[in-house]
Length: 98
Image 1 (cartoon, helix red, strand yellow):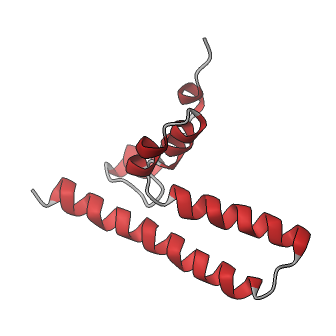
Image 2 (image 1 turned 90 degrees about the vertical axis):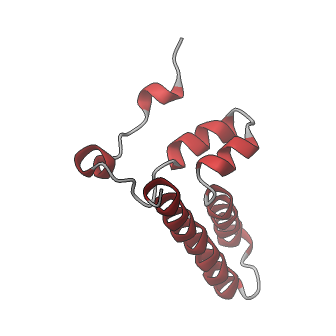
Image 3 (image 1 turned 30 degrees about the vertical axis):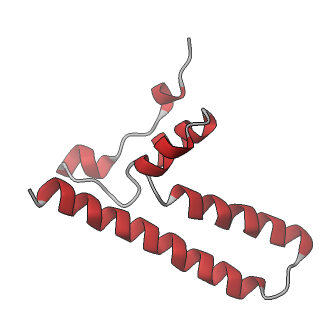
């Protein structure tokens, strides 16, 4: 049986330095989403939902040209960055703070 996990790219930062990067967990979160495991996807990589909203909005904007789309995209980018950096900081506090 072919599994998506067999084709995931390794994190080179974690492999060479032993430290997670800002994107660690994203691929596994996508696999959880594809399986319908929405809570597990959030706990694996909380930024997956803001990223998906940003992607969907940006693609829809290419077709429909929404009003104030640049402002909305900017706010969605900031929200996504907040989740990425926040997850990174909390992970390090939890893992290395003990």
